[in-house]
Amino acid sequence: MPAAPALTVHAPSRTVSIDVRNPAFFQNPHWTYAALHAHCPAFFWEERQQWYFAGYDQVNGLLRDRRFGRQILHVATRDELGMSAPKPHLADFDRLEANSLLELEPPAHTRLRTLVNRAFVSRQIEQLRPDITALANRLIDGFEKDGEVELLKAYAEIVPVTVIARMLGVPTDMAPKLLDWSHRMVKMYMFQPTLETELDANRASSEFGDYLKSLIGWKRANPGDDLLTHMIVTEKDGERLSDDELISTAVLLLNAGHEATVHQLGNAVRVLLETGTPAATAFASDADIERTIEECMRHAAPLHIFQRYALSDIELEDGIKLKKGDQVGLMLAAANVDPKKFSDPLAFRPDRNEGPHLSFGAGLHFCIGAPLARLELKLSLPILFERLPGLRFKTEPKVSDNYHFHGLERLDLTW
Image 1 (tube, rainbow, N blue to C red):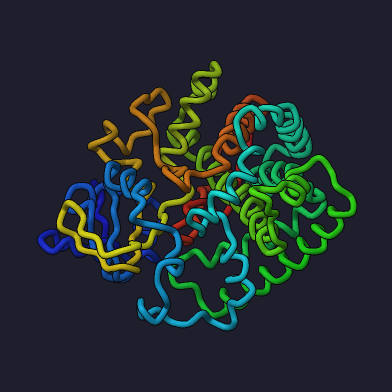
Image 2: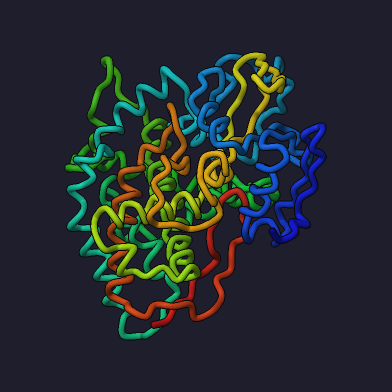
């Protein structure tokens, strides 16, 4: 195994130092994850000053453990937890986060998810198959004759943002602006964002929120057959979503509905080409396509960490003691390469059948958009390789220095 200079481990104390800005780490975190599995799959990360978990069983269990939650201020005050006050320059960003489905716990989470879930069940998503197929082919028509393409901008970004915009009833000519707002906002989920990043994310949040508020007002007067109209008019227990809830939910669905899929599509193309996996084998049948997509998501996950709060004082089975309000990091991508769960876990094997990966999470916050993401990948990947035989790298793909998202800065291909 190659050396991992970005990592130092003190196994007796389960203390680990990881330099996330070191290319030896972020270009291929698998080697670091392998070392963690070998020495201490549960560890205290020095730079982050909190506990992290990399083992499949632990991550899967903690995702489902109701002693942990995505929010904490519903059970404790900031003073009680010694938590710093909100940053005034992040007021618009925080306003969107406060009502986000991803950040809520029951009963608020249950109410919101019930209103949204109907649009994302598999039978509803399957109806999008012809539109996604046509979109993928139309995009390839636009660059096939060129003999080369930067795939992220020309294909991987456009497919998911167009689909989720149509579902919500957002004009598709807004796609470039939606991408801009989303890219600026999700930089807040990086480790230690700079002040400049925070200010820019807040500006994007304000612009995004203002646009959606105007669109919601228009749809109240001009209802359509779309998810945003559905959320506006549907009642749950005699209540409707407030404007703040509508805006936050729409932002989450637009951001989550394409950010991860863009990275996953780029990562999947990269791993298929790097491993020399024949498209004729990977996509031979519907069953082969499904297995290939699941292995791409296991092996090259776009989201590597999901954070949770301890909702009370907790002692875990392995002796780790947590205080109410402590955050823990659940390493989804590391769990996906746990040798206790997957044989030869660092190898890409499209015919693998060893149980589910955790790229979509688990439990209460299992990704609501999983059926949509799977369908987009099951259609856009085979179409790409079928339409462009001889597809290969034009230049070496460059991984973005953007942990804990994992994706490419660009993907230049030729054929």
